Amino acid sequence: MQHTIIESIDRVTDDVVSLLLRGASGPLAPWAPGAHVDLALPNWLTRQYSLCGDPADPERYRVAVRHDRLSRGGSEYVHRFLDPGRGLEVSLPRNHFALQHAPEYLFLAGGIGITPLRPMLREAVDRGVPATLVHVGRSLPSMPFAEELRAEHGERVRVFDTERRGRPDFAELAAGLGPDALIYCCGPGSMISAAESAFPAGRLRVERFQPAARTFPPNTAFEVDCARTGRTVRVGPEDTVLDALNHAGYALPSGCREGVCGSCELTVLDGEPEHRDDIGAPEGRMYSCVSRAATPRLTVDL
Image (spheres, rainbow, N blue to C red):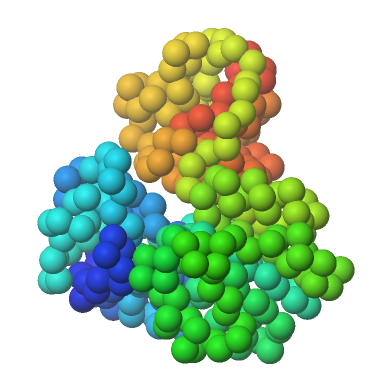
């Protein structure tokens, strides 16, 4: 974890605040567009937020937090109780939504989904690559950074306040793209579903607020061998790997517990994981909060 100090808190919209976090003892770990960090909040909760500042600034991170009216305690705490000058522990950046090289980009943002796409647009423009941002929200005052982005990037930014203009036609946007363009989409589930229907799967990259609804085989019990300690932990049908290991005394980090943040990653040395995450675990990895085993045993690097 990295120790930071809240340098400023700015209200971006009625329900979004932006936190500028300064490294308490020097530069912070570098990051690239698409990365997110865990904030360890003083109320013992850990929450994940996309970095939306300038990757070229080694001294500061910026995140934006929308106040969720159904908050489980994270966003409400940020909005009601955090103040400038307070210290916050912040994880090293992780990136499951990295900007890949392409000759053209289309960025699709729904509401607070603008946060990972904002630095992506800046990087594309700095590289001289054609890029368009489509920013969708209920009304212009409710859309984080909309006016700032239009002032900075001009006609590259197209704002759709749905109360006045309706929703963008994704099929029309798809027809105007070159054959090698990449599309990055972050927003609510309905927006991602519409994007998946309109754009080729091989060129669409998405980041979800919540996991997609899917069905899996019934849970069965299995065992996890911890290679470094020589212990074996049983994971029952009602347990997650994360909880079973925590109960056995292994202090694994965790955040979302929904398979979308990646903070509970484990290295798998033997056996076959049954992946249930929404990130796409790389070879030899699994996310222990949701994924299980497709074999009677897994050996992990613990």
